[in-house]
Length: 318
Image 1 (tube, rainbow, N blue to C red):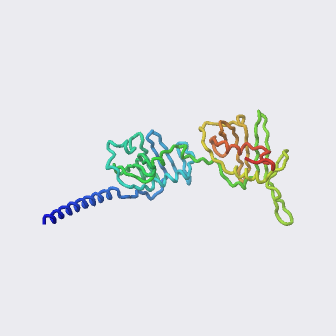
Image 2: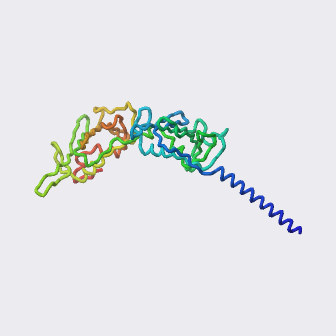
Image 3: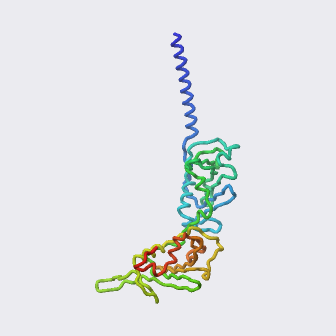
């Protein structure tokens, strides 16, 4: 009888422990229930306030986005990523009912947090404070405007929104179909002496059998020589797209007299002009397609400093 009594006590004890564990699991499950905080409308304006006091503003202008007070064209892909992050926020659980005196622990103190507000037609549709990312950069701590709780959110939102105006500016200088380029004039300066040459796409000749193009590219003007069509065509394709590696200050200028080279690209509906110089393994450029000067890496800059020998059948093109 005593043995049975002891067994009952042990069983009751085990049962009590199991019930306690179950209750804790229920509480924890309720506390960390995953939920999605989303907004239906896509924002047309996003304001980002960083802990260092800087503000970055993005606004939709027609079908495109602009960034900063100067309304620079913004990178469509970068803005799209920000919009997706703010339109749908996945909360993995509650880290604390309030940050209290532990704001720094979550990266929500005034010096480190990022405040993000999204608007649609002038109406606020989403607002949150973003704290630090976790060590894996796969989650972060956030606070919603609607409450004081600190949540663990999916994604490294702090890294995503720790951006500057330059980070969000579009780097595109121009882009068009390379087949539309009909001619290219390149000039180089050597101690004040400018020399130039023009490569012109040949027109199709009409024969009894129909239209035939004997050669893709010809030298135009006084220069003579035999061109390697494959080399020229490859080079022209590279000229059809140009992206800046870095935009220079708005007041920066490159005068013609300070340039070491210039180029004119004749395309179907436009004429693109460039000039610039090389410095410290970078190429500084001005282009008629944008109002700002910019830099590109030296290997990109070599596109604009070719010589006739680069297009000879006997010389490899870089």
